[in-house]
Image 1 (cartoon, rainbow, N blue to C red):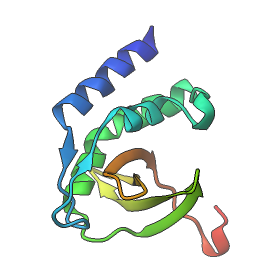
Image 2 (image 1 turned 90 degrees about the horizontal axis):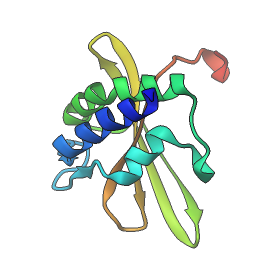
Image 3 (image 1 turned 90 degrees about the vertical axis):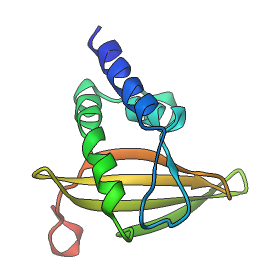
Image 4 (image 1 turned 120 degrees about the horizontal axis):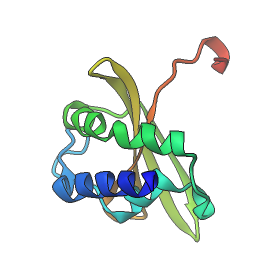
Length: 130
């Protein structure tokens, strides 16, 4: 099955790159673990992503790693509360090898920072319209 091949490809990437040092978080590591791997294939509530979404995200993993290695500051920071724990998200956006991408980092409470997602980043025009 094609998704199995993509899972193997992404799993191999996560094993080879267990963490990255990002200049935006001096003295800390951003970890590539099973939670981020799972999020590449599933949305919240374990709903599967479309095959096209999965292909795009897996293909962007190398670029995501390169972007995190050079970004001095996140472009966005946001948080939510779930189960009385603060979950913080940071977004890094940039052009890597000719593609504009957005990489999301997540931290629950005071835990480790985790790679959460990578997506193609589309520019929005004025007032948030595409």
